[in-house]
Length: 200
Image (tube, rainbow, N blue to C red; front, side, top):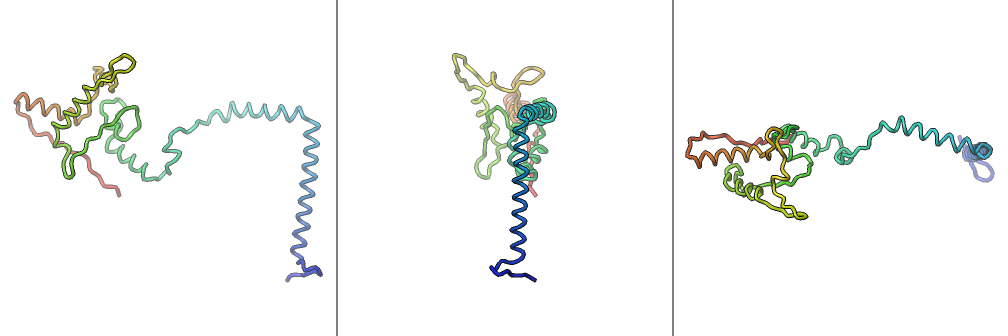
């Protein structure tokens, strides 16, 4: 049931207008007394917030650390990028001792990448001679910077044992096969495969 006044206003509209006036007067009076209280105690409201900010900033807020990983900030938790990253970690586990360089394929780092692709339908593992030629060209690179001649040996990842440049295991196998062929020694067939997988 709705009551209509002489001016066409309903009872609910009149009640809502009265409620707004009461709220407005209450807020106006409360903020008036708050401003009056702040103006009468300026030292308190200038020092206490600053002291509380210093205390909480040095104790509680100092425990928080900024997140600098762009993948965590941008990619969702169950995104396809993170699923593929975990898959790559399972196929090529990160070796913290740097005896293997498979981790360089899927982790960010301060290095350059050289990816070799076979022709359509070809197998890169059957192109050992071409891969070794490219590898030799990389080793023979010289870059002159500020009067110093840098080579691959100055920039490569060193092993902990003999302080020599680490090589990818595939390159090591190709080198062993070539040395065996050059020395005419009997060399058994080495099964070289690449882990293939299918995303579900």
